[in-house]
Length: 181
Image 1 (tube, rainbow, N blue to C red):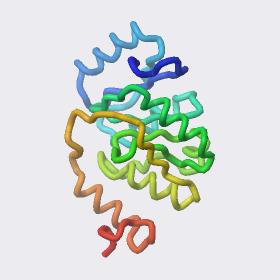
Image 2: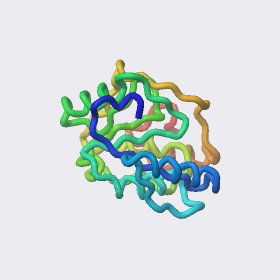
Image 3: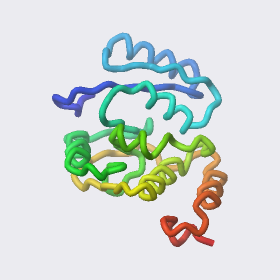
Image 4: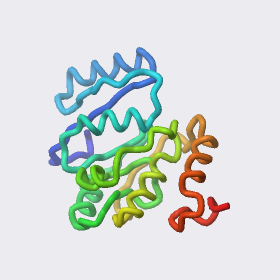
């Protein structure tokens, strides 16, 4: 909120699986912050399922996905939106070198499709980017979009998610060479 500047925005969040204290904290925050909405998400579902549920409820022309450990720096949102608006072929816009932030134009999201819910917590974003490229969109990295990530990347079940990704994209020229077998 501090670095949104004059942007018009809404924030959707869910504490699916985070426990009662996180849920209560979000409800308290939503009572004080009118831009925050809390769509209902069942417990025990995958992270991509939670994201899909939230994004279906979103009303904006651009959908920004941030993991809960990201701190957005000054000018980051403006830089991402500027890149998305100047590139109608963008399927996703990301800060250069970060995978914890993904800005997707709504129209691109509708054409690419929702996040694959077979992934539990890792690789859903890589799969989305590969599908964007497959459908003719570009992934646009933005050098001036600064953010910090509080936690080291990693997700429970990551090795199973990597297996799903490699099986799904096996032999496809878009899969990074290290993943081909």
